[in-house]
Length: 70
Image (cartoon, rainbow, N blue to C red; front, side, top):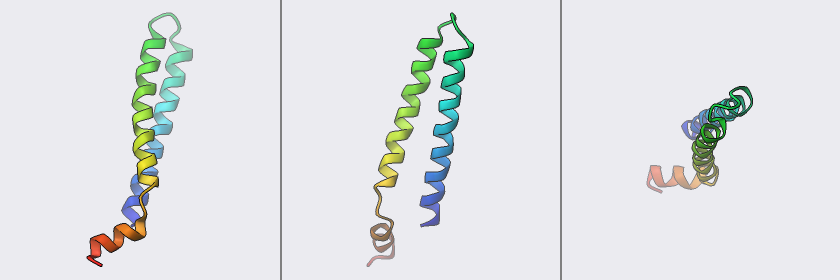
């Protein structure tokens, strides 16, 4: 289930990057729609967090059994 862990790690990396982008937008672009833009990035980040939560709830042992036909 290494690829499942790889997906989790990559997804966490993407979420961290989105958090950095959102922070930058909200703090470095004051007065040019930063709230709307920041909210949009946050909404995307939250969707990725939902996917990560689902991935974290996957029981890799059950998944391996299903894949192997046990």
